[in-house]
Image (cartoon, rainbow, N blue to C red):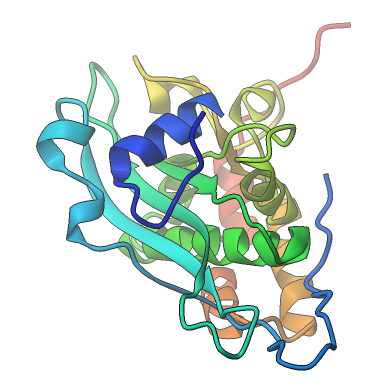
Length: 249
């Protein structure tokens, strides 16, 4: 596999995702030697050329949003930011009897020479939060449907190319869709009719706890986290749409 670089388009990014816990926290281990800057992490739109509709998307797929995360240079004299991770929210085509348009949040990591896992994780979290907030805002009229139709495709925690993205998803309360389809939850196979059941979706209880703790910690993207919490469905709504499932004894 090649390294995901800032110049990669969506084709390389998706190939990276396709082949390619607990949070380690937000603390950054920064050298104190002269000339070294404490890191700043930010996200920005990936640009219109990141996703090419003709070459990179399957028939009926639509890219709704794509972002990249960067960190400030290690040394004062450097002017090139470090590319950390990227993500794209891709809407699946409407298939068969499906009544909702499912979106996959594809995320992947760059491979850093310097910075360490905490910096990489911070970038991956910012990417995931941005895509989730965008989706929740677009689906405000149907908060349960918003949860059901946001599926994270983040690769394996065992791979350097996807470890931070996978950890970011888990730290935010995402769990494998197939697990939640076997438990009492708001998720049902009919939502994904004819489509893949791979990926991770939000466990609402875990998500409330995770995002609530971030608010208390005064996290870097406090405004985004606050908006996500406001847009998550309340307990009464979740209970109303929860499908009770019981394991066979």
